[in-house]
Length: 146
Image 1 (cartoon, rainbow, N blue to C red):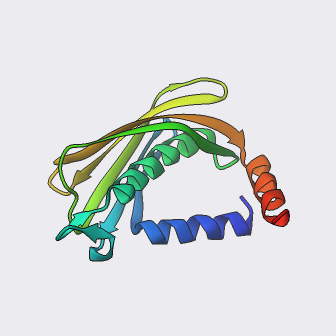
Image 2: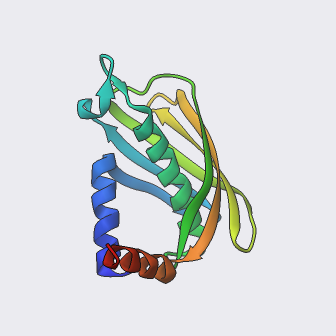
């Protein structure tokens, strides 16, 4: 991972409110803790669904990175999220795991819970594995063409 890529990941994590990475299991599991802030809310203290989706998506991506290493970038092909209860300001836990891995495609699942273990949302996603250096090169080329 380049220094530039690492800085972008750090900025994204800060934007999402990452507190800590709890687990990165090489078997294909990851657990992350986030702090949901009032600035992420609408309607009197309900966290906007995009943050909930982002937290679970990040946990699923971390599960792939835990298994494959930082040389591969998990790129979303599809993502489905089901919301069961409102996320509120405070600590939340995002978990992701690999259900099935192919050579270039992974099927992953994840969930978001509050600190009491109440499931707030679940997700499933299909991710394509692409070498990180190719993703970075394509991004640089796209930015240079603007």
